[in-house]
Image 1: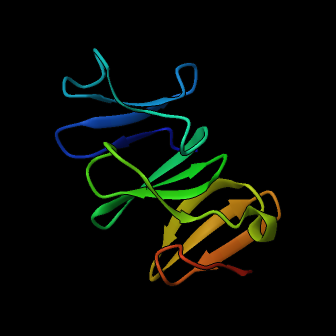
Image 2: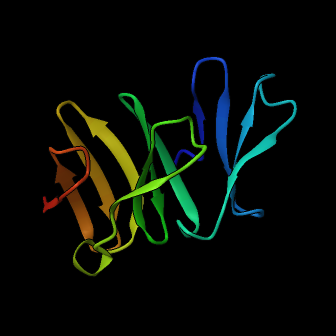
Length: 115
């Protein structure tokens, strides 16, 4: 599960002990908190996807369009899909490994179909 992603000049990571998103501009030698809030739940996985960053959290799937400074819920229907564990891009679709199985989405993660 990627808890660290490359955003060009920055690295972005999940810090599970602080329940935050942190960034580094010096190759990981030092880290600065970029986002911390209980609104999204606990971050589990990150995926750069086009101009967005997608995040699996304990409260569903969230996205950021500003390098992780703020997050917006994209899908929080965990009663149908289960807890989101990890994401992967697969051509024109997203794959999500959840606690209820493997799902795919062809609309940027707004809805999911069991595979």
